[in-house]
Length: 433
Image 1 (tube, rainbow, N blue to C red):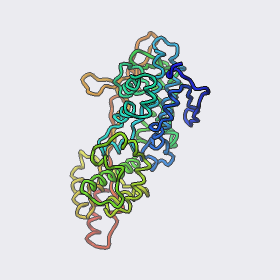
Image 2 (cartoon, one colour):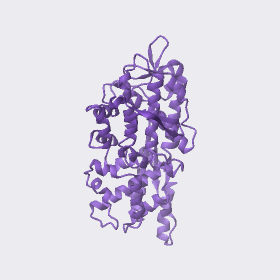
Image 3 (spheres, helix red, strand yellow):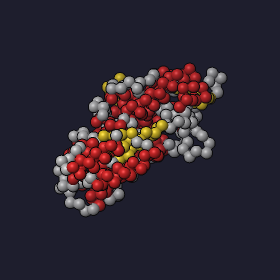
Image 4 (tube, helix red, strand yellow):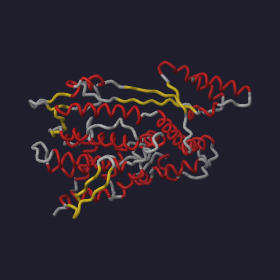
């Protein structure tokens, strides 16, 4: 029996709070889960700094990756099996891509990427195609198999149906993280009838489509996504923690470039500061390492780095006010000048943060970014784009919502003994009210 077709002597199961069980029978999948690159995902939180807002949000990208794999396994084994539009030969390729889709995520993910100008998708590809345990397992299936998996995740594969199952406006990735993140944060927004959606999914050559009878379940899914983004993912307190995280890394990077003598040298960050990151360096850095440095950097002589790290470690986060950059840019200029006069560096202590989301949209000719629409399969076999049939979805299609907050350290603005300081900080507080 070939390696690709090999089954375990006994099915392995992972107990899961969202899907009850994650089932593994394929030897290749089991071997991939056991690689050190995949096990590393246990040390990367799924929701970054959100645990500082919702204390239960300690789950990892390992949990989520198994969940996406399980949803895809159910789709192809239970729903698509035997349908002429589904090529059963693509089964293992689809499962591997689902399992490994988040393999390249780094610590605190998107915030970390912005500081060091990295892209986790590049590292996902590098892990799959490089000299890694994951690549060794995939290469045993076939010499070109790692490339095929990487192409699915990068959305460059000709197998558009598989791509859509893992990355589209209604995919296994979103269906897992909405439910999983809702469960661990303790909110109800992310709950929707996934069982119903799976039952009405149908394969087509280029994408998964939904039977018209399942439209209301899809509406519920889209509204769940909308609520989760604004109630959980863009929660202003979590964003405050992200601001701190970003400023800590920026400060450490700046100090390194200025040849500052760290009491505790940031050896794990050296290649990141030099912008010469190797795959080996990247894989060594996880959230436990980051938090170790934040802990010891509280003792640094640089007052800004020390203060920011203390705030993050002890959850003394920045406060925030609503802010409209288009209308209040003069206020920001005034505040910047006053902060500098008060001896508070506005580069690190006065931060505008913006969040933006587009709940659902369809492809519009002439636009750069193609958005694969959700198509409904009508009784006569015709495909209809979702917003053409759903008034609820039509109402939010193409409507981007953006939110801006201004973050600052409220404790720095407390009255001081000096009359001059008191008056200065009073001016700042009045502008922030």
